[in-house]
Every structure is written in C-alpha cells, then in structure tokens.
Image 1 (spheres, helix red, strand yellow):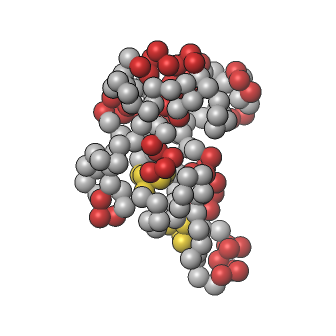
Image 2 (cartoon, one colour):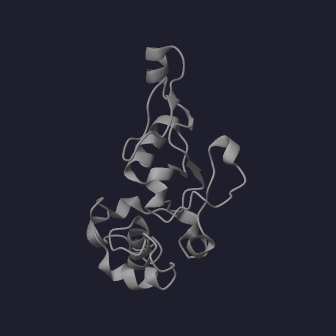
Image 3 (tube, helix red, strand yellow):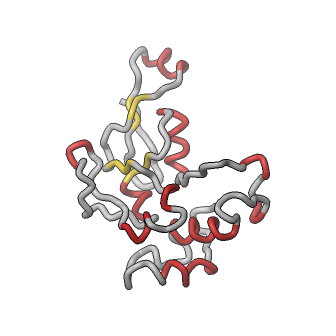
Length: 162
C-alpha cells in the first residue's frame, strides 16, 4: 500500500477500538491500512484484490513499513521497526515494554495487540539511532571488511552505515 493511500472503509472499525483523538483514527494511518487489508483478504488468505499477487500468499503474514522491509533485507531480521514508522501504527513510546535500556522502550497498546491481526505487528521497535543489527550480506562485508551497523535514523530513512 502506498504511504498516502487512504482506507475509508476501516475508519469506523478503528474508531470503535482507538481512544478519542488518537492518530490512528485517520483513513491514511498504517493501522487503518492493516485493518482494511485484514478484512478485505480474509486475514491474508484471499489475495488478488487491490493489486495483490497470488504468489504472495503466506501462512503467517507480517506488517512491514517500506523502510523496515528494506532494512530487513540488509540485517536479515523480521518484525523490526523504529519509533517513527511504528507511531503510524499506534505505537506508544510512553508504554513500559521493560527493555528501554536496549532502545526498545514503549510498546503497542492492548487494544491493538488484541485485534485478529495483532500478531502481524512488529515485535521490536527501536529508538532512532539505536543499533538493530549488522549488515548480513557477504558483498557488503567484503567492501567494508567489518559488518556495517544498521540503525533506524529518521522518518522514512531506514539505516546508516557505521
């Protein structure tokens, strides 16, 4: 789905679960997009609508923002996001996830995690600038001679190499 794509069909469903005034109560929020996709595709079992390709079927689909997906190709980890991208999905940096010393402060509220698509939500959300992992491709290692670090940086920027 595109960054500015709106999912008006999901607004009522999200408004029924999200607190008044929450940022996800917008047709262009990532949570509205996920909510719409989930119910439109029967939980990912029925592809072909809105340009989805049948070969993309999966038993356990996961949500990934564009930058998160690109970063995962570098560091090889799935279920990883950063505060900037996760905020669009309803992430609350003020929730205590119990791992703040590792750059994993905050969390998703239960009203999101308890939805039928709750297991699609990123499981690790890092603060910008925190180390996520190292580049896991041989070509990059050959060029740098040491594994470069992958870190979330700014909105829509997925890594920097150090």
